[in-house]
Amino acid sequence: MGWRGILGFEYGIVLAPLGPDISGPELVAAVANAGGLGLLRAPDWMKRFAVLQVYWGECTEELVLEAHQAGVKIVPQVGSVEEAKRAIDAGVDAIIVQGREAGGHVIGQDALISLVPRVVDLVGGQDIPVIAAGGIVDARGYVAALALGARGVCLGTRFVATEESYAHPTYKRKLVELEKTEYTDIFGRARWPNAPQRALETPFYVHWRTLPSHENETHQPVIGHSTIHDTEKEIRRFAGPVPNATATGDIESMAMYAGQGVGLIKEILPAGEVVKRLVTGAQRLIHQNFSAEIY
Image 1 (cartoon, one colour):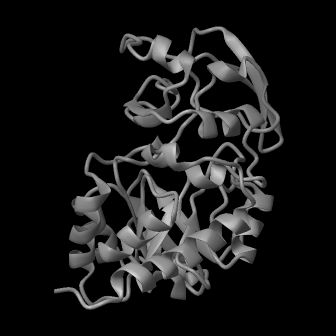
Image 2 (tube, rainbow, N blue to C red; image 1 turned 90 degrees about the vertical axis):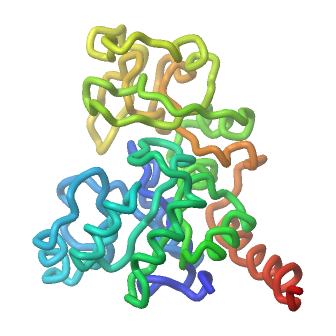
């Protein structure tokens, strides 16, 4: 089962790399200490690590070889069967399959329930764990992913709403208070074009959701400041970065990304408790509900 581990880690639970600085060292360590795999949104100067996750670009054989020569396992995140096939052919160590339900930047259009089994079938008997991402926040989602053939799950939104997350307290609070998200592209159009996101339906977002396609953040007013990787940055209206703990200004008018499972998040928890509840809850569900013979 998925809680028996992937990529040398105790459990098949992965913390998505959350920027800017949201998945910092404290959150990554908390997830890792609980037996999961914590992915850090790494600055350019980082040189040695166990697992490299790549996203939104071609995962080539050359890149895989370079990682393997350095003793690093490489795990791309994909949003389509075509991307998954190229990654498998390149010799990757695992694949994160992202459904359209996911929060933040969304690379594909397919729902997780249809995409994961197709990728699992592509992998076949090869030792390439498939990790499901998108809308998963609790043990029920974990078990559902295992039923689809995944060997692990990758969570972003649920880990943003933890004590160790470096997200701004207002962002965390909104994840508990709000229940709706929308697939959009109004944030960060200039810096990262053609990169749609799933965002919380905050009052700011609802007011601006029909932003004309020619508008972007470039000439918008500065609504705040944030320190990202030790560098202070201006945050303009419609900019892509979500507010981290250093953010100041009009926090509620900043981007707040979330997956469709956000309505299931009812409290801010320690990250280790999130991992524990996922594992024990999944074990209990399978034992109580699915271990009996089915007629």
